[in-house]
Image 1 (cartoon, rainbow, N blue to C red):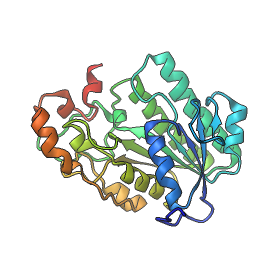
Image 2 (cartoon, rainbow, N blue to C red):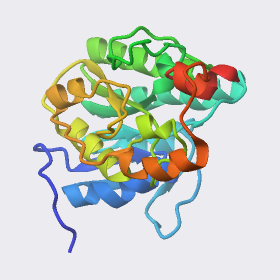
Image 3 (cartoon, rainbow, N blue to C red):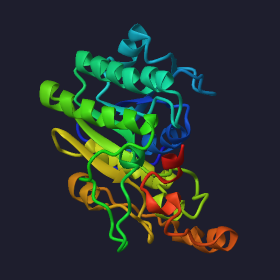
Image 4 (cartoon, rainbow, N blue to C red):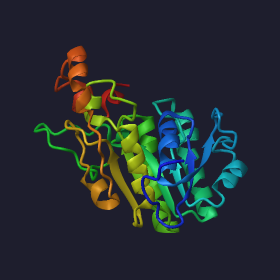
Length: 271
């Protein structure tokens, strides 16, 4: 029997998860049912052992409408997850997100959790004094990928004001089973904390559009977690510091002028 880790808000039990075949989607497929949600999966790639998953592109309006029908919330991960030529980003990430919101509006969905990214503010420099960075910094995308995340956040704000669809935009750092680089000691979001963050975002009683940073409770974290705690009740439990000794022994500390340390977007600013 699935362990119920939390109680979804009334009426928010069926969740459409787009991009369900990807890395973060795979983590959420494992964690969200434990919070009591029934998942409807959507991805252009087939998902092994999930015969009920919808295999379609966001450009397939009929398939998207069918997948959206009757759901209580959407977790939107679908799109290209790295830098790519602008025409590809335009189709998959910009037009795809627009199609997602239009389908949500038509279906009467009132909550979207949007997978944004630190790359929406990637050219923001870290303060010289090491102070944490607040979520209120202006958009400074570092790539076409980051630009698409800015578009998604602004589109979410438009649909909140115009159509009453509330969105939590998660500026996710690095969501992997464990941090892979020294930089990730600051930007890591553990799979378990990812589930906690998305669960909190689905269930929070709020309206409008809100952006929060998506990282774990990292000792070396660069970004302010207080808005997520205050708005959503998100309480991360993991800390990348348990991996620090190994990673630092292998790679050493980052130099202050290394783009991986200097900018919120890291090496994306060098592409």
